[in-house]
Length: 165
Image (cartoon, rainbow, N blue to C red; front, side, top):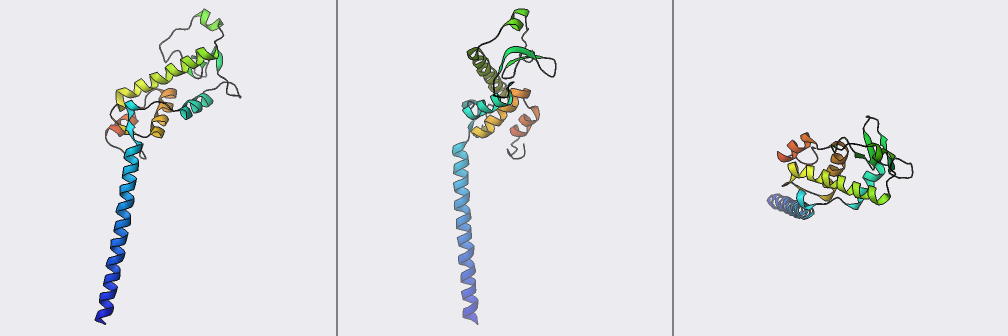
């Protein structure tokens, strides 16, 4: 009877130790992977995937074409290209601008400037926050279309997990 009890106790100890080793190895691997994939906000740049996504979302034509001429959006504001909002950027639209048809190169340049403005708005709030490229891209997409998210800033600065946000 006593030898059975000792054998059962040994088996339980071996199982518990094995589970603990597997758990801590897995956790160490996950921690290393997370820290390797995260960079500071200021060191990240918009990926090609998010550029394609924003262009697809902000397109005017069904084939993904941008607006080559200035048009009025649903809010009554002037827009051009892939979501360039003149009012949000503090720009005035002149009659000459309304009459002009823009080239694809001009629209791409404007799009890149708008992405840079979204990144710079984020620098005010997220400069020292570590995040993955995917988290950064999602944030850039949000800021590109809506300006900057004040509530998200507060959550991230207070150490909220990205799943909470």
